[in-house]
Image (cartoon, rainbow, N blue to C red; front, side):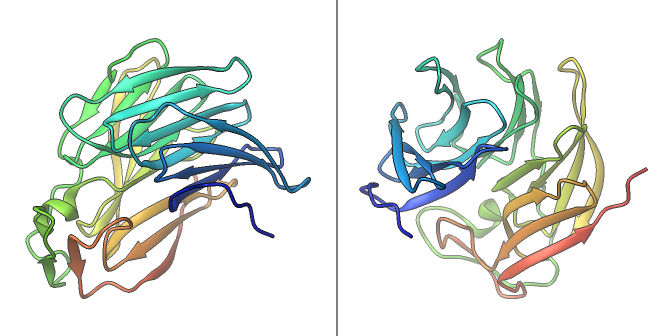
Length: 245
């Protein structure tokens, strides 16, 4: 079964939880909505001015998306409206809902930001969240051009994830570990909780519904480019067991 329609590479996918609605983001700057059960196209969302990199959705018909235009947009599908959140200094690489009113993002300057629907600016920022270790687990870290350095590529935040119904979040880069964070209530901030050693570029993160596992997609290179390379990494999926206290 195929769903043709995008005019560029499909960069991200997500389901609306509890439904058969599938959202796809593309380098053609659009987000399309599909009904998998009926195998039908439903709608297209426009708003981003550059390639869509990451999308996320919960139970409501709201889609959170980041693109290379340095913006994060919250599309309210039913209301046919959107909220725009802009980053003034960096490109946002990834995003994730915490709940219907709060979400987190990661950017290429190494920062993690906590956002709320009531403000257009982050309510809290963790700067240099993935500081690069000296040897990156003894792997060879190379620069492959595009005016990026391999060290910069290894420290930018390429993935974020949140455990639904909890205060637990995670972020990944290429610095040799996945960071676990506590999201404090009422917009108080993001606090470090634990580091999980992991060699390679962490290009995706997802928590199990039970909260007992964290799944990471790992590669020798960043997901959308070859401006960094870690020869010690293995391309694949890493599963980390978590203890619930």
